[in-house]
Length: 290
Figure 1 (cartoon, rainbow, N blue to C red):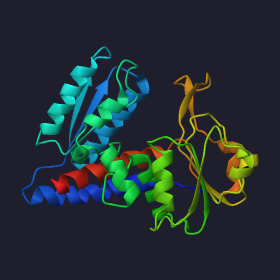
Figure 2 (spheres, rainbow, N blue to C red; figure 1 turned 60 degrees about the horizontal axis):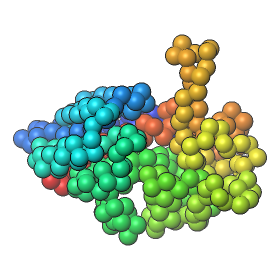
Figure 3 (cartoon, rainbow, N blue to C red; figure 1 turned 180 degrees about the horizontal axis):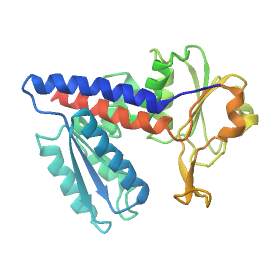
Figure 4 (cartoon, one colour; figure 1 turned 90 degrees about the vertical axis):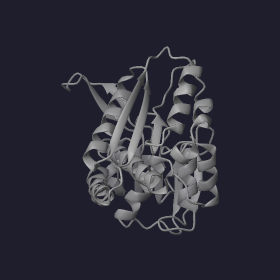
């Protein structure tokens, strides 16, 4: 078993981006600029955005954090998005999810200029992804593909099961894995809560990508010997033995699954850092386009 070390790979990517930013600034251009809109004070969202601000500083990007109260109206948030769309100094921006229940997330995503949608959530970018056209690819699936690329994971002709069908991870992940690219060219099945014979299906996968949002859902009997397993899930669970009072748990029962795998990600230092690195890559691409 070998860990797919997203932390190490993301550090390499940040170094590569920092070198490109140095050249951009040396040529007299401004630095790439990423903005983030944070609504409310959700603990996990606060942490994610703080990491993104830190990442920007590390690679030489300019970053702007826009905080909005949890009681902000949908109309007020849409006005802010309109301002960001029109701001020529901002190359890309994200609206941190999840949003409060009184705000229609789809309406917010639709309002973002596709040319600044560095999260890759807008219909135009998702459509381009489906057609194999240049686009901003959702950060988590793109990060996983980059992980496969840097570890030389063989995907062509492999049986890949994507467990989870969200618009953010599962669906774009399946598209990427099936495309005529390297990595890619896999035979892909999207599985979900209504899939029959789920254990049998997963246990035949050469590559198992899990983004179902259920802690330690994938057990050893669901994993083929020698499989590549990628765990996208991350949930905080109480743990009195930890100083923080909690620990992070993935969608895969790591301790009981790891010895069956050729490669596997760990819940911390796996997919998360690659997602953040992909967001930086998209922002740099947005800057280059502008």
